[in-house]
Structures are given as C-alpha cells and as structure tokens.
Amino acid sequence: MTTTQVEYRQLGKTGLRVSVPVIGAMSFGSTDWSSWVIEEEKALEVLKAAWDKGINTIDTSNNYSNGVSERIIGNFIQKYQIPRNEIIIATKCFGLVGKTPGTLAHARSNLRFERDYVNQHGLSRAAIFNAVEASLERLQTNYIDLLQILRFDADTDPEETMKALHDLVQSGKVRYIGACSMRAWQFAMLNEIAAKRGWTKFVSMQHEYSLLYREDEREMLAYCKYNGIGVIPWSPLAGGPLARPLGAETPRTKFMKGSPFEPKLSEGDITIINRVKELAEKHGKTMSQVALSWISTKITSPIVGVSSVARLEESLTKGFDLTAEEIKYLEEPYVPRAVRSC
Ligand SMILES: NC(=O)c1ccc[n+]([C@@H]2O[C@H](COP(=O)([O-])OP(=O)(O)OC[C@H]3O[C@@H](n4cnc5c(N)ncnc54)[C@H](OP(=O)(O)O)[C@@H]3O)[C@@H](O)[C@H]2O)c1
Image 1 (cartoon, rainbow, N blue to C red):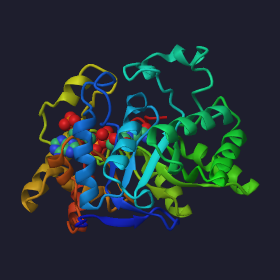
Image 2 (spheres, helix red, strand yellow; image 1 turned 45 degrees about the horizontal axis):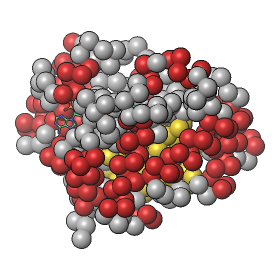
Image 3 (tube, protein in one colour; image 1 turned 135 degrees about the vertical axis):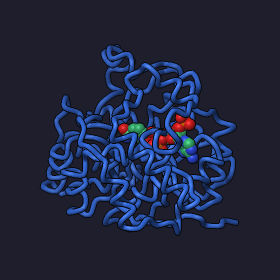
Image 4 (tube, helix red, strand yellow; image 1 turned 180 degrees about the horizontal axis):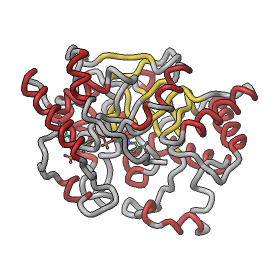
C-alpha cells in the first residue's frame, strides 16, 4: 500500500506526471565503475523505499556503470512486480557503454574509434537504435517512457538524429523524448528541425542546475519556460555540497578529490552553503530539503542522487515551502561562473 509522500507535476506541456523528486540512478551500479556507487542489493532497498513513498520516476542512462544501473532497475521492476504502466523510466543514449562494468569508457576517448564501439556512441541513427535495443534488454521492458540524448552530437547531421528519435516514438519503443546539457541554441535548433518536418519534439531538458550553478537561467530555462518544456535538472545538491556542512567527507568526496569532478567552491558558494545550513536549522529541516525546496520553485522536478533510505527521506520536500525573502536570501550571494557541461 502506497503512502504518497511526494507531489506529482506535469512534465512541461505533456500530460505525463512525474514525481517530485525524480530518483537518479547514477549512484546505483557497480563499484568497479566508481567506488562511491551502491550495488544491487542496497540499491533495490532504496528503490523500493522510493516506490513505497510514491516516487514514480527514475532517471538512469545506458552508460551508468556500463549498463548495470539499467539492469538494477529492470530487476527492481521484476522483483517487486511493479506495474509497468505506473512507473516512469527515463534513460539516455549517446554515451559509450563499456563491455564490462569496470570499463572507464569516459576516460578512454579513443575507445569509440575501435571496431566494437565505433557505432555505439553518439547520435547517428545506428547508434541510437543500437542503444535503445540494448537498454530495453537491460531494463527488461518493451518501451522507454522518456529517452533523452545525453549531449549534442556535433558529428552527426541533426536531421538524422531527430528522424531516428521520431521513428522510435512512432514504433512505440519510446514514448517521449528529451535532451540533456547542451547550449540553448543547439536544443532550439533540434526542436526547430522536428517542428519543420512534423517530427516528435523534445518535451524535457535535463541540465545541471542548483543554488551553486545557475548559468542556464539566462537562455535554457527561459527557452524551456516559453515553450512549455519540462525541466528535470541533475545535481540539484551540486553533487553533495548543498546537502551537508562544509568539509564533511564521504566516499564520493574522497573519490572526486583531485579529479576534474572535484567541486571547486568559491567564496560565494561557501556563503550560500552556510545560508542553506542556517535556514535548515531555522526550519528543523535538512540542508538537502532546503536546497531542493528552493529548486522546486524554479523547475518541474529535481533528479536527486541518494545512496541510502535515510538520504532518500531527507530528499522529500512535500509541504515545505520557503518564503520569497528566504529564496532571495539563498540566491543573493551567487556570482556567475564559467559555463560547463557541454
Ligand atoms: N544528464 C547528465 O549529464 C547527468 C549528469 C550527472 C547526473 N545526472 C543524473 O542526476 C542524478 C543526480 O546527480 P547527482 O548525484 O550529482 O546529484 P545530487 O543530488 O546533487 O548529489 C547527490 C549527492 O549528494 C549527497 N547527498 C544526497 N542527499 C544527502 C543528504 N541527505 N545528506 C548528505 N548528503 C547527501 C550525496 O553525496 P555523497 O555520496 O558524497 O554522500 C549524493 O551522492 C544522477 O543520479 C543522474 O541520474 C545526469
């Protein structure tokens, strides 16, 4: 029996209702891929708790733990006999999926030029179809609710990409299409091509957005708002710093240390993190609830990364609203920064 502890929001102009939050599955997979992810047994516990609380939307990607994340979701649906029509699976194509869980495909840029991988990357018709067939097999399903392109592919004719995505929707293997981090002009161009040709358009954008990274407010968020496109941002807790006091160490912070993914905090960031902490104490909430409550005033639904049931519970914000003054207080120290993720 579900006790719904979340709200549901329409994904842009579509009639599809996603939960707030969406649960991110990048942290479920194989420790061979990344030491900080949780493996199947623990991930199933988190997914079941999320489902029982009413979370109906999971975001994964074909390349997370080289497909292990998708396999865990497929196993979750089978194990708990989740009605397929009640759960929303969002996955992605574009990234290279290594042949073993521990293949660090993102770190081996030449891999995509090898025979076994050459047509398994990017957004050609072949790569997209190959990716979708493989995702369906791993997820043990015959359709994907939301297929997102992970990035813009400058090496493929955008018409080829948009036609392939349209054909997948027509075939019933994909219900909606979305896109992730790219320049606003690229996203607008792809949608324009679809509109001109009468093909399926993107219904959602998944980009980096948090109190510590607001660069897409100028163009991307404005474009999505104007066109009724749903926004489901990644790293709403900035990958962790917005969820805990400064200096706290976790397996993920240790893994990131010294890598290109290590968050570099500016003075403005530190002030924001301290303000999040201050408001959390004032309201008797967790820092992540404050950061997620803020972001939920701006977009459709944040995709949160959690590694335990306790953290999942700390990601629920239903009924907790910040005042306009508090929102301003959190935003005020932000200093524009270099654009990333494209
Ligand atoms: N499309 C893309 O390019 C893209 C890129 C990245 C992510 N994503 C998607 O977005 C999802 C979320 O990304 P993310 O994991 O970077 O997002 P996030 O929600 O900003 O960060 C998650 C991290 O925050 C920390 N955290 C969460 N709740 C906490 C709590 N209650 N107390 C203390 N710490 C807490 C944990 O850090 P520790 O593990 O250090 O404890 C956790 O790993 C991914 O799973 C994936 O689905 C998409």
